[in-house]
Length: 521
Image (cartoon, rainbow, N blue to C red; front, side, top):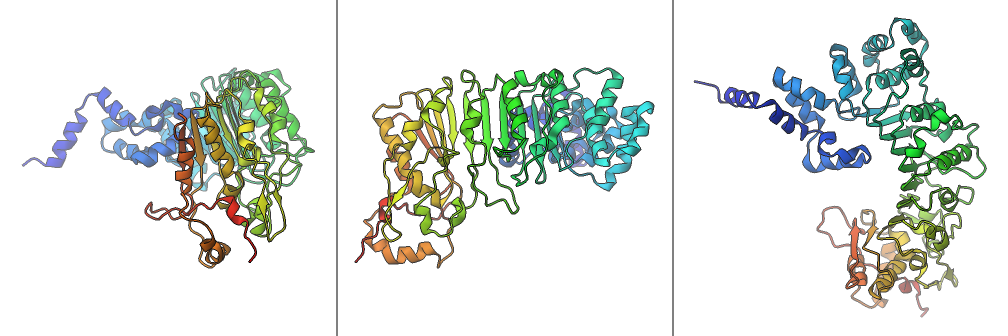
């Protein structure tokens, strides 16, 4: 009697090659979502929602020789996340023809000892006899980066993580020069450099310049670092015209984690980059707090202000602007303050405030994502016992320009809601009046927060004073949607305000700012 499992296997194995390629490509992020080249978040979303990825494709490649022959080129489209570098090197050692199939490459900042033997064998084959003698003089991590970049000639997206020693591509550069290559990464559209330690932007240095030189079609450049205290001592060189061939074509620049102090030298190479990237349509500036002793630091006056960087952006080209200071903390120290009561007197970060005049330069700006610190000008009056906010409510509406169609506001937890929530509701009121005819969508991104522990200040305050507040109150979601109802603007809230993640708990009740004015008995 014929084995039913064998019969099913024969059925799959006899399918046409083109049909198998189509089925296998559904497991590949690159094949399924071409836009993932410029937005790596699409990959993670796709894998999470469909629970598909390289691991499934790898399993399919091991079912038969025919399936392996069809699946392996697709499997190598993305290397370094699900498919480890060790596995990739071992396969490439046996089948070098798979290397041109690599489209997305993630290079870590470390190298395991298990990779070393096969790495040096592959590197010697890539470099040739005349250059192989240099391998013994190079750092193993540098050999890994240089070799993998040399093999992956058809890259479309590249992410390199580096530490304090920077990126050394001398071996790769000399090999290319010897072979007469002019532009190695002719198809590269996305380049991300990620610092893994408290290093400076300058540590990318000559490595960044060389990658720009080799990538004439680059569209997106991401500089991702970690906030550090020290001022850098030197900067990468962008003076060489050969190093700038990618910058005029650059469409999107993201700066994440480097805040660029006013007094440091890091600012100068950054401004050179801005000066040459005149066709930017998208700019993201995120002070992304990492772990360590500086994670509590908030934007200070000695940071390069967003409004300073806005001067160097093309006023006619820019369409998308994203400013976020990523204050991830949700406790009283979210604004660097010492007590919860101090949150009623938020500091005014003049270095982060932008004005309508500065924003009005960008006549084609259609999408705007803002941290509240960019527009919130509220101040408080009175003593600690009798706090009262300045309720002008126009901070946000005074900032917006007529061209903006999509607005996203990045709220920062329980504390920031008291400061700018009324401004957002007032924006809905003005939208209903027709004051913002071009505005189409307003999104409030609210982080998912767990309920506070019992016995905290919130519970004590509620127990003493909640009976004095008129009820019922609307939840933030209800107030938000009610504010924009009938305006024609699509209002969305992403995330939950308090409660747990189960989706069944009631959200925390929103208490208006006026409720902080407690009458003395």
